[in-house]
Length: 239
Image (cartoon, rainbow, N blue to C red; front, side, top):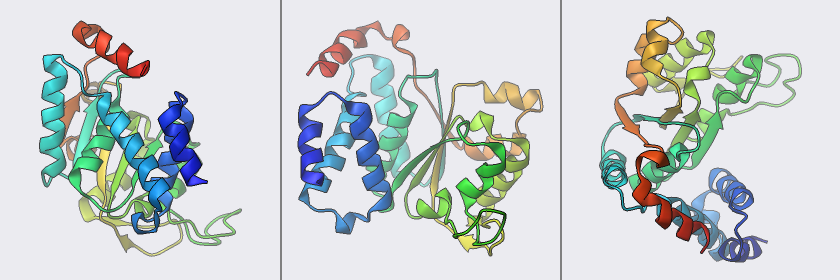
């Protein structure tokens, strides 16, 4: 039951499991169908994510201001950079929450799916489009319509799909494998722990896609560069 999950969130430190529940709920069930328990669970998760950014260092105060500015802007593409584990997805979540976009927030790691399945996962496929496609799939872009799609480890996107993604960002349309084009309204927040500019120079990442993704760039500093945040974060984790 969602009410039980909401209670667990308030009384448990197993944030990884509860994050999965909240994200699945927010991504698959329209907000108008949430009951009171569902609303408490999703809002508690989002609030926890935001509290992780409520730290005292000047760098994080600037980042919070930048998130608020970007969330309300017309920029539909944002690139979040920083080392692994600094909270890039939390930044993406807060851009979505503060934007007021009514669609879901969905997250996807570009390095976790086999290359030959990536196109279908991102853009969908029609029934019978390939062997094993016994049912149609909407794909993440259509599932995130009206909301925000977080693409983590964007630097790992294969060359052949970089051009496809570029066209989607330019045209605002996706073409499922074996299907017809469909218009989508999705804010894309991409993230990387790599130097994408260097990969562009090495011809390992398309320069036009890089510029399209980085209309706005936010960098999340590592904790070692903001020692004054250590104590507040420890207190937050032990609450």
